[in-house]
Length: 371
Image (cartoon, rainbow, N blue to C red; front, top):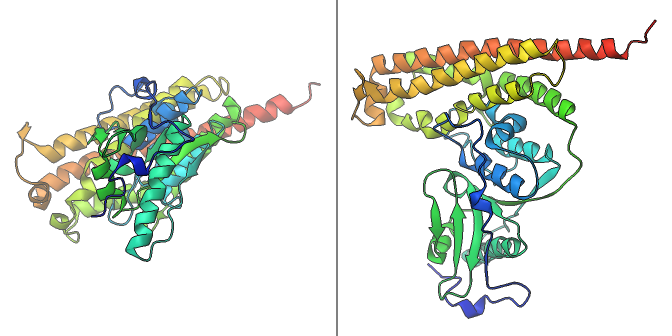
C-alpha cells in the first residue's frame, strides 16, 4: 500500500491552517423525540447535526420524516445498500438530498475521478483527502457513508502521519489515522458531501403537505434498484419468512441492524405528525394524530421483532443468525411482528391520505368567496 501522506511536509498548504477542528459540531444534540429508538441511522443523524451547525432548526426525528427516510422500506441489502450516499441515484441518497433541500440547503457531493489504473486510484484518494481537508478548513463538516455514515470534523497535517477525525452515531466511532484513510479510500470509493446554501425552504404548511404526499409515494413504490420496496417489500419479507423458497442461511444480513435503523424511524414519523398536528387546521388534526398512533404501534412491533429474532423462552439465543433463521418457528415469530407492523402502517397510510383530502377541502372552503 502506497502511503499518500508519508510526510506532512508534502501536504502543507499556504491557503489553509495545517490543523483544524470544528469543536462545536459533535456537541450538538439532535435526539429530541428519538429517545426510544435503539437503532439510529448514523448518516441522517449526522446530517441533522450539520444542519443545526449551519443555522437550521433540525433534529433526527424531523429530518427522517421530512426526507422520507422514515417512510422507506427495503430489506434485500445485497441489491440495495440503504445508507449509501455516494451514488445519488439510490433511494437513500435521493431521500437525504430531498431532506436537505427542504431546509433551504443542498448536498454538494464529491465526484470521484474515473480510475482505470492504480495511479489514477491514488490520485482519486488524494483528491478525496483534499476535499475533506479544504472543506473542514473552511468550517464545513464533511459527510460520508464510511462506517455506515458520519462526518469528518477535524484534521491535523502537522503530524508525520496526518490524521482526520470522524464522528458517528453508529458503530466504529472515533478518530481515524491517516494510515486507515489510505487503506480504505484507496480501495473503496466512499461517498463524500458537504451541505451548502440552496434555494429557499418551503413554508411550514407546504413542507407538511409535501411530507405527507411523499410518505404515501414512498410507501406505495413497489421496487427500487431491482429490489422490492415499501409496502410491497414488507409483504415480500413476511412471505419469505414463512415460506420455504428463501435460503435464510445465506441471507441472515437481510434482517440485521440496517433493517432496524430503517424500521424504527417509524417513530420519527409519529413524533413529527404529532408536532405538526394543528398546522393544517382542526379538520386535519384527528387524522394526523391517528396516523401517528399507528406509526408508533408499527415502531413497537418492529422492536418486538428483535426479541423474536434473538430471544428463546425469554433468554438470549446464542445460535448464529443463520442457525436461528433456519428454524421455521423462529421465522414465523419474526413474520408475526412484520405482519403486525404492516397492518398498522396500512392504517396509518389511510389516515395520511384522509389528512391530505381534509387539507384540500379546507383550502377550497377558505378560497370560496363570502356571500
